[in-house]
Image (cartoon, rainbow, N blue to C red):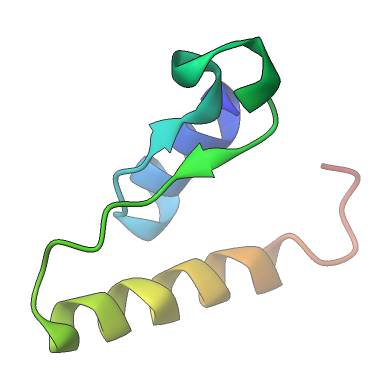
Amino acid sequence: SMEFAKQLLQEAKIAVSPGIGFGEAGDGYVRIALIENENRIRQAARNVKKYLKSLEGTNV
């Protein structure tokens, strides 16, 4: 979850909290805080989608 959170920040310009920070069971997850206005949340979702599509066909 830590590496994925770093990649989201660098590639998609989205800050999330690595799940491991919330306990061992959180490893492999990220926490997303929806504290922005609706337009910024939509843009963030588009950025995440674009980033995930860029991973298709890779062994990540």
